[in-house]
Length: 296
Ligand code: G1P
Image (tube, rainbow, N blue to C red; front, side):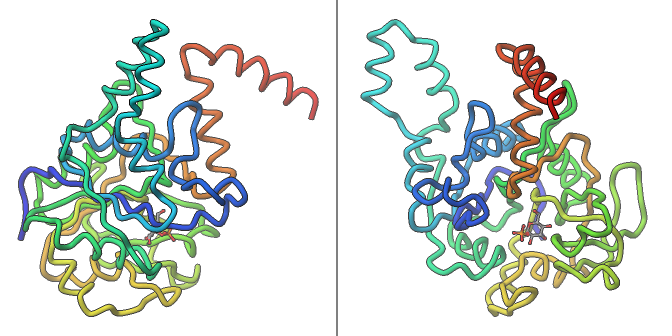
């Protein structure tokens, strides 16, 4: 069983983004911007704050903009420097992981989240690793740790696997992986069972898995078999659940504000949230939002 420092993260970015068409016709959904940063950048920033040093993107066709985003843009940097806009150059350089810290692997067929993670299996050492779904942005409470850092700390405490969990309204449980909580210790809880996208009447609770994980390579024993689950996809939830009797598996009710940017309403809410707290534009956005509301 793997425990100890978590240094590698997998980011599945192969999805089609059909819910955001036509915006995502020629652009990966992970590059949609929330105020001034693409979604994927929020995930990378959260991972780096948790001590992650190696990033594996599981990509697909039409996703090269993500690779370009994490590379130099020589023309742009040169032009900005010539115009004396060095602060932009500095900002773009600071967000880039070091050479060799990012690797890309393709998921050739869209067979599910479990399959996406399985595509990265040969790029991992036999140690715990993180998974971040970039559709989900989690803004830490002011001055607090990011969500993944909270998971990594719990992993240091218990070993095994750790998942971020959060309550959802009952009518939403069929959209998520849902856990059955056991013993609760503060914000940490044991997980007794988990099921992917249950019908409301079959859901063991309303605690959903929210797109941040610390996992162990034991999940690949299950994923190797290619078993299909909910929606006829190879499910990550099922691969984790297959280890419930073998490894400690905990949930963390994280502190932080989560936005599900896989949905239009979540994406717009994230933009409003980050715009209102943005030091340059917050006041102006509040004024505009107030005026718009008054006209409704
Ligand atoms: C995936 C996982 C699910 C999890 C969700 C979080 O589902 O399979 O367990 O609750 O992410 O967003 P998806 O949204 O890819 O259908």
